[in-house]
Image 1: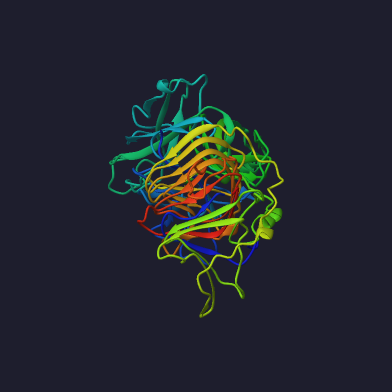
Image 2: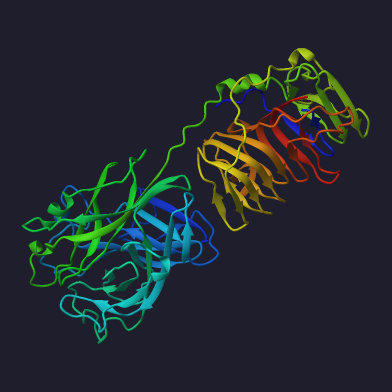
Length: 576
């Protein structure tokens, strides 16, 4: 949207303007490869590296979803995507094909999109309260066609999670320490335990020359467990569901499986992405899951198998098996309608109280604009406590600067906002630390106290937020992307941070004021000309920077206690 008027810059140096007026991080992810990318999954020796969107205090666990073409899946060779490496900052992934006899001619289709989920080990409580758990084991145990290690699995105890039924389990090998084909295998899942190991399907145990052991080195296998659920977290619709891959036989068994369907629990506003895993190992060949057809209503999977020497393509048939999956989709937040707000901000600062309105400026505070002519402010009275005296308001148009003077015009006092403002705001209390960038629960949530610790960074997506008290401690930041529009209704603000910033060239800078509208809903009361009496509901202190249009039923104060500059880009309308 357009700004309500030409951008205003207020340099607020000192006791400024009183217008009387548990788990750690996680992320949902999807990566689409294009023709311009420097690497593709299958033709790069070193794989492709994908950077995390969040910052992690420990190496997280990554879960992936290999895909297969839905139109002719049987023509694609047995393939998967595997992790080569995971760090705190990124993961490296590569597309692998299972060993295949040279006489079998199958396509090697590129998997051009990767869906993934990332979380730190431990318990994770999503925004809506749903809990998921993740951990890992290190093992060289494996299952295969007719033979495997003894034992073939490692037991994983999940009894502490108090599941009421056998959960959904996703598993993913995090390392690639052995030079051979393998995926992961899950078996015998109950509410209290599961078995986890490596899967070699039908690939010969001695397929690596001069190696008499299938896995001389252990591999790190991650697991994620969750009860069935659906909800909203981090701006994403999500669900954990169980499904079935049907029995697949005939000359085109993968097509038979792909024509199956597993419906979603909820309606998605955008096409969801899916990550799935087998919940059992039936049949001697094992196999691994690949996502096939996908719509906004359902998804299908196939259980793929390798094709060793002497086995025909039709032998990729498989019995039916139960599978589990998570689906997620970014919930589009329609920008709030803000077209009627511009009438509240005809100038840099003004009041909406025609009976008593006071503009109070002290110390080195001042207001500057860059217009073609001198501007006026909508107040009845003005108190000048500036030092040096009189350095208050000035207009700058190119190299021409007006003399310092604040000109008041009562006719510019605006009508009070006629829309409905919320009352008795209350909700959950949330706090954010300085580790990474946090996403606050998106549009429609109501909060009690929202506290950003020193240097914390919290991202607000497009939407409407109701907050009882918003507190930004020293150098905390609220991030709003340039294309988003955020409306915040708030009882109180106490800020020593930066509100509405975007990252440009690695540096956080103030964003566009038209991206943020703040409405203070407390009415406060009258104050005396020396700004004693009722305190302001909205307080911006030392180190504060804000880019926004701010409307308050009550009083607003910018104060830096004669220490550091405070700046506002945008406009302010307040009570008196």
